[in-house]
Image (cartoon, rainbow, N blue to C red):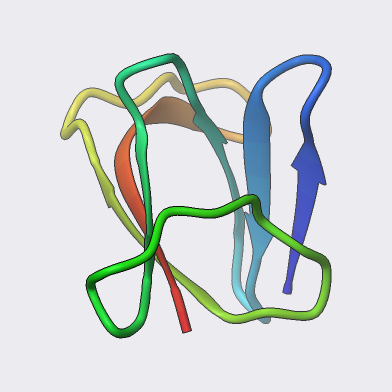
Length: 71
């Protein structure tokens, strides 16, 4: 499950164990599961995120999203 905030440019991904905020910028790639399309995130879709290994110790932790694959 995730929340997408277009105004502030982040995706907050929630699992049963944790929440992580993935900050996006103009370099973040949004990729469809077929690898060919780039489109906006929509509520209710599953996502996989490739991200920076550097993560804040805040609650929730934050890091930079390199790419987001929408399933």
